[in-house]
Length: 145
Image (cartoon, rainbow, N blue to C red; front, side, top):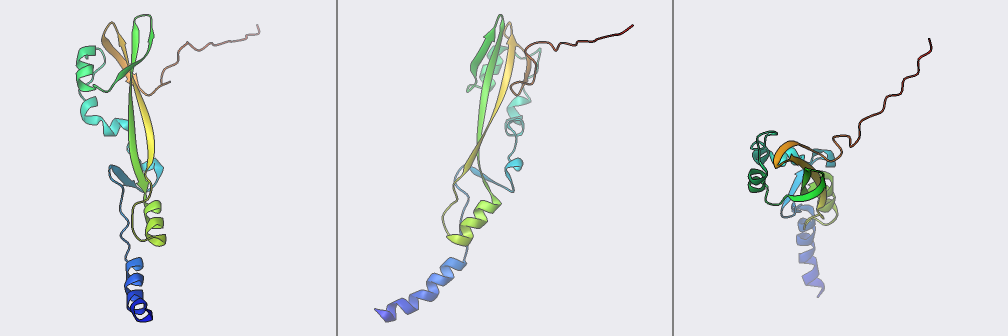
C-alpha cells in the first residue's frame, strides 16, 4: 500500500500546481464588479431600434418581449426590463486556482433595470428608474428689501 501512495504523490502535487479552474457557464470574467457591462451596453443592438416619439408600443413589444408593465399613472404606462448578468471576478478565479486548482468559483449576479415610458402608446422616454423626478422641485426664495 505504501508503494502505491508514493508514485501517486507527485501526480497529485502536479495536479494541484496546474491551475485549471474555469469560469462558470453563462458568466463573464471581469476584473471587478464595476467592470460588468451595463444593461445599455448588453442590450445595445435592440436599444438602437427604440426612439422616443417614434417607437410605438407594438414595435417595442416586438423588440423586447420580456418587458412587462410596471406602473401606470393616467395615460402614462411604464414598462420594465430587468437585465440580470452573471459574472466572476479574476480574484475569485485566482482564489479557486490557488486553493482548489479545479472547478469553478460561484458566479455572482447583478440586476440592472431599465424603464420605458409610453404616453398614448408612443415611447416618450426611457432610462433607469428614478431618472426623472415624480414631482417638480420647490424653490423657496426669501428676499429682504
